[in-house]
Amino acid sequence: MRSLIDILDLTTEEIDALIEKAKDIMLRPDAYREKCRYKKLATLFFEPSTRTRLSFEAAMLELGGSVLGFSEAASSSSAKGESVSDTVKIVSGYADIIAMRHFKEGAPLVASMKSDVPVINAGDGGHNHPTQTLADLLTIKREKGSLNDLTIGLCGDLKFGRTVHSLIAAMSRYKGIKFTLISPDELKLPSYVKNTYITLKNIPCTETNSLEEVMSNLDILYMTRVQKERFFNEEDYLRLKDSYILTPDKLKNAKKELSILHPLPRVNEISTEVDSDPRASYFRQAKNGKYIRMALIMMLLGVE
Amino acid sequence: MHIDDIKNGIVIDHIIAGKAMEIYNMLSLGKLDCTVAIIKNAPSKKLGKKDIIKIDSDIDINLDVLGYISPNITVAFVKNGKITEKKHIGLPSTLTDIIKCKNPRCITSTEPGIHHIFKLSNGNTPVYSCIYCDTEA
Image (cartoon, rainbow over all chains, first blue to last red; front, top):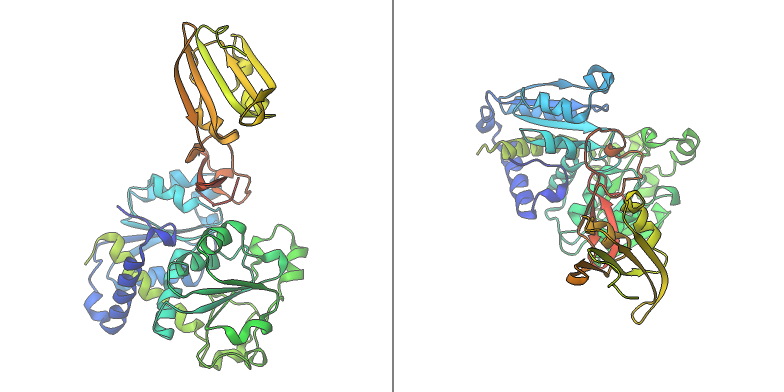
């Protein structure tokens, strides 16, 4: 039995296979309508979510399975003080696979240690978000044709941005990758991520506060939201929340083939005027999330 | 220093100078009834100065604690006044319930009954990270 807690739980070959499977599902959705018939997915979301939870649920429904679960901690027994371990032991008796989002970092790993069924990390605090990374990789593959030889700019909250951490870990395994890290000093990438996936692998990396300065070099621009829910101090959030706002004007020097990604939701870090730019890939990215999660659910359930 | 003043026990040698009390506390040696000697700043060819701990009792000790606090330590097990075994302790690959994660967002800060586990991040340097949240110790 396998779980997906960290994107590196999957080999690059497995990721390639998932991407190919997701593409096939897009082309031939009818061939997959019954693949998970009589299987149940439990979505245990201790933290709010729109895209991730609904895309997991849509994914399972489109595979012919069914879903159960909760969408906030207040409507689960955790509000009564139940531990993650106990919750998962119970739910793994009711479902065939679990997708868990939790505000505590490492909660899905604890869940996978206690569960009798596969557990998927659907985001744990400011730590990791491997299925968003799968959606990001599918999007990059579809938009750019390859996962190699790319200069990837990551902009905004690189400290608490779990999608950023997982994406860097994943992309560090491909050839010809260069990272450009764009953030205020207070929201720089954590040293463990930088050391493990960039410095020790000798991957070229530039750090800057200025998006404009590096825009013309980028093949991918991965924008992120400064997340209010990660701050203990509201003053810090208010000071940093508008650090980067992408507008059509700032894209003047960008490559014509640039892809702009964002895990969403956005607040104001990408102006709505950018949405009509063909380089804006973030809505396609969100849609891709459903297909790659369908492929993942099938893989973890051992469905061919 | 000679070890023949211990009949059955353990000599922890080549401790980085100044680290003996940390080991003493982490191994809870203060709770033992037997003789425990702490020698600080003993001359050492390898280290210049070193600390030594002698425990006059054949107790079980957590070797991972020793390797974490002071890598390259040696532990000699003494029986009937003679060294029967000598171990060179390097950096342990995993630390279980030796240190706790300081990240308030980590699941270990709230979840009861789980082990606090850290893994060696890079074999050459004594940097450990929490297996749950990756925060460095």
